[in-house]
Image (cartoon, rainbow, N blue to C red; front, side, top):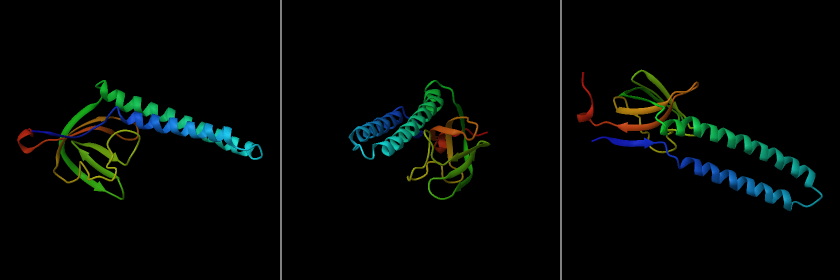
Length: 155
């Protein structure tokens, strides 16, 4: 019997959308409620923050499309094997190889990250099946399945 330890979710985009709506709402409220004296400086700051939030939103939607939608469409690579060269630095940073493929997990928009919980990949010799989206800078893990000894293929 296998155990799915992690799978990327569609629900993550709703958190992003909620934060964006909340930020835009607060910004517009502040923009129209500021007194006339300090309006110019505050308006400039708020416009800057709105532009920054718009860039962030576009980046998050692009990441969602590149990772979550790609996974849902089956555009991923699946490998399995023993965790090797596991390394944990500070915080949520993890680094390891699986079947010769290198992974670095240190947060990001979507995909697996330790996020203060117990590592799902830690320990040499842990046998996993991983689905990932290959990237220019790093491979993004979208699925982790722990295979028990009776399910492991032996050569």
